[in-house]
Image 1 (cartoon, rainbow, N blue to C red):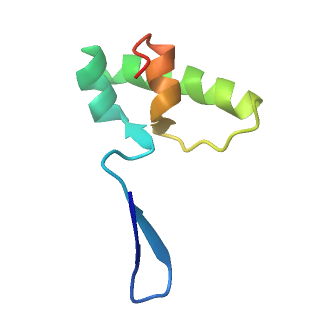
Image 2 (cartoon, one colour):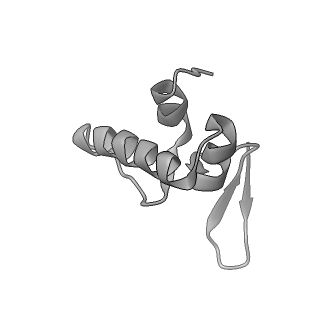
Length: 73
């Protein structure tokens, strides 16, 4: 992970993998339809919100997603 300062004096983190996973990547990993991936995201994000975590619609925390589908990395 590297930290770079851009021209607006904000810090940008560059990582090999994003913290959040998106629907198309989840569809590929799970081999499922868009609606099934969205349903999975909804359930995982609901559990994360109950724990007090911040969530974004259409995205899911990568670690929580892998844990939910049984692919702990």
